[in-house]
Image 1 (cartoon, rainbow, N blue to C red):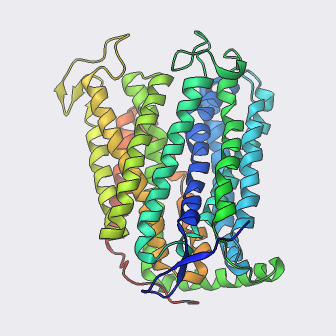
Image 2: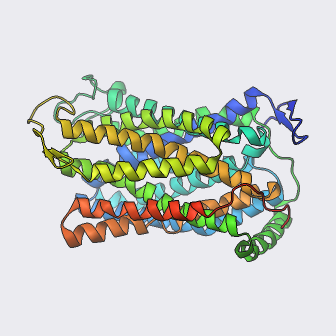
Image 3: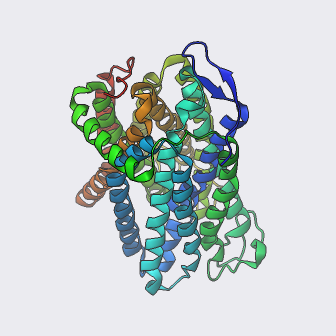
Amino acid sequence: MAVTTIETTDAADGRTYPGRAAVVSWIFFDWATQPYFTLITTFVFAPYFAAHVAPDAASGQALWGFATAAAGIVIALLSPLLGAIADATGRRKPWIAAFGAMLVIGSGLMWIGRPGTPELIPQLLAAYVIATIGVEFATVFNNAMMPTLVPPERIGRLSGTGWATGYVGGILSLIIVLGFLAANPDSGRTLFGHTPLFGLDPATHEGDRISGPLTGLWFIVFVLPMFLFTPDFPARHRLGAAVREGLDQLKKTLRSLPQQRDIALFLLANMIYTDGLVSLFAFGGIYAAGTFGWNTIQIGTFGIILAAAGTFGGWLGGKLDDRLGPKRVIAGSMSLLLLAIIAILLVSRDSILFIPVAPASPGGPLFGSWPERAYLLLGCVMGACGAPLQAASRSLLIRMVPRDRVAQYFGLFALTGKVTSFIGPLLIGIITAATASQKAGMATLVLFFATGLILLARVNASGRAGQGA
């Protein structure tokens, strides 16, 4: 875990910062981890598990949801504590390495999930929980390294570039799997019309299952630059002393949070709009499938296009963050998301804004109808806004909290992002079931983003909480 030579000094704050190689290497952490979210949790393995490993799709979706909730509870409960301990020890890389190993092991074990093997479900879900905890905790400690890499006025660009780079990695990994590895069991051909590489068997869905080991290998390869070239914090205390100090600091922070009005308001706003964002991306594909009858290839293509929009949005949002401030970027992103959601609710299979149009014809071209194209365009808006919303949120937190407790506050940030993450999907499910309408269920997302906007408007983002407060 090499430390690079410090190369630059910022006159404004008198701090020294590492060179370009260290910053670029840190950015590649997002590239290294994004395939987990793209391949495992969204577009490949999760749908495969529900459709082919579980007894039926409904029970598969429920089991996957229970496992996600279990991982979320662990992450919510332990993130602030581990962040406080990491601040006390001073080191970040050992924690990233340990939790990265969990990601690699959990992802690799997903290969065992052969179709029609319900007896393997407990092992698969355990592997998924382990990998999810690993990737989320590793991200907490990686985020905490940001203030030591660039001056405060460049934090937004660094955060946005990281998100954009991650999206590119997600796109590339999805193209590799859909285009060269995962084939339709009926035709034996991939999205690009090839037979799967490495002799992967379409009948046993080896192309879907390989997404787990590929995710682990991808992480190992692309996280190495961060370990080799990005400097870590110097060691401060041994683990035992760090645990005691971390617990003490966490108690003080939690007790003082009611007095730190702006940080508390921002964490509350983040909790609410993150619930909305998670639900939006979780149900966007399901809504499209129900509205337009899209199949796996269409949803996968939709995902690639959304990720491309997210790449551009993350890059642009980072530049706007440094120029306009993260709060304005968050507010602007949420406002556009609100408009996009409302517009999507006014698009159906045969109408746009209540204006009748011709629906897609069976066997027609990809996204051949105007309603599908409208949904695709609005989906691009959502993808382009989702990346800067998340990137600017971590940028704003860094600008507001004490420098000596960044990891601890990122633990609280992770807590607010996970502790109520079940509420959005639960509300959508309840309202959809009660009304038998997908539109009614999706309409609840308007409440999440509207409430988040109202709370964010009350946050004074110009000050930083005192050191050691």
